[in-house]
Length: 398
Image (cartoon, rainbow, N blue to C red; front, side, top):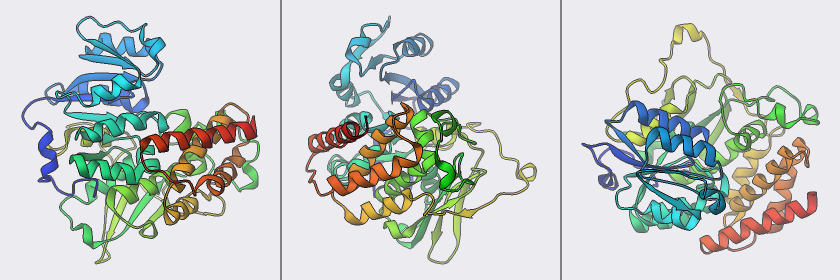
């Protein structure tokens, strides 16, 4: 298991219990990073913003440096790092230095929230250093699940899930016997196009696709939600986090996004986690685990005012991504890595208006057929495969 199933897990001795935790945020200018900083600012007795890392957004990062006074700040873009200004701290520049910072002895917990393959090297660096990782970068497990699992077992690192669905499962499993899991149920909002037929998905624009009905997310993950690819990636991630076979993981559409996922046990009972749709809940739970919940992290849920909640079985013919995820897990090897890389490339092309929305899944499927037999032995192989898959898609569609 990559996650702890109880608060006594020895791997959690790495995080302090009686002082503020030094948090390194990888992706501080993204939506999750911004939410995490708001949590930290309101709970300085629990957390300290030790390091803030972003990709290219030097303007926003400079604003965060002035407001939160981290000891370290940096950009993966070496050129734009020259624009950073910090008075009582140090600047790190480029992926190599960021990876070294992940291993800094004063870092208590690494919040990994950089989207896509761009964040995978730093996640592996944190794992190699034996850090506690609050993981919001699902691609690390989707693409490199087997490799990351070996690294974590070797270093005695630990993952605390930040995705709302995996956090819900994680919370539901506390104190339970993992051997009595019957199935995991991932809930999906359905995205903006759930009620549309497959034929009606033609001509969808990027502006339509990024308008999520429940969550405020980045452009890429919003498109993934619209295609249900996000749920497919989450299924693969759940497989690695909880060591549950893909055939025991189901997806159910729940438009209100109140039940964030549930676990069914062998006795037929289910335990679910409910809250208003706000990422501050799972972020704060991971950052403070196992010290307890952060007071007031999420607005209280009024069940009476809610009135009703709905569930609908997912039509996998209209949204084939979930079926695709189970297929690549059965294939094993590099199939899930290819799926992830191809989806990143296809979504980027769609957002650039160079690929139709309803062609995203077929581009991914074709890439799996072409590249899934390739062997990946280490992280360098994984990064190289990612480049080749994406380059092939760009050459064929631009």
